[in-house]
Length: 128
Image 1 (cartoon, helix red, strand yellow):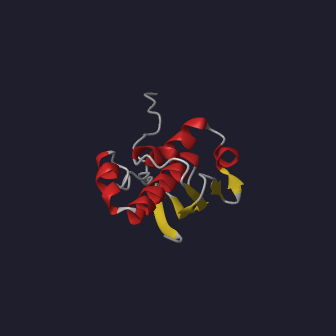
Image 2 (tube, one colour):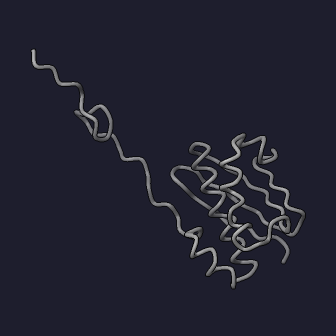
Image 3 (tube, one colour):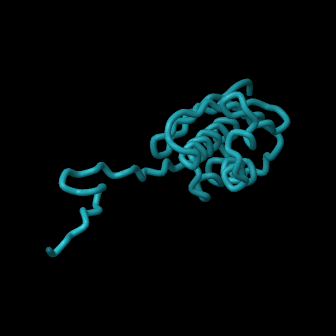
């Protein structure tokens, strides 16, 4: 195993994840993961695939993330990491699939319609 590269997507975010053997260092857009995301829950969410396959601290991750917000980017990274881990060891596919880490979250923001304030919200109605 040299270098594995996969793409993860969620909402409007796209993450290009590069996985290689190492000591568990995760770098996002040339910054450490805790500095880039700043929230412990998102960092934990991203590291979940490693915990499921019990390979914490065995791989280095370098990711380039674009678009969306922080939670969408975290979801995209998690999907990319899970795809990379399946490439490393196909036996892990079953474990990751059980935890629903190999499924792209299909939810997107609904488009705004004319005559409405947002996608479904109406303008305030006044009687007089």
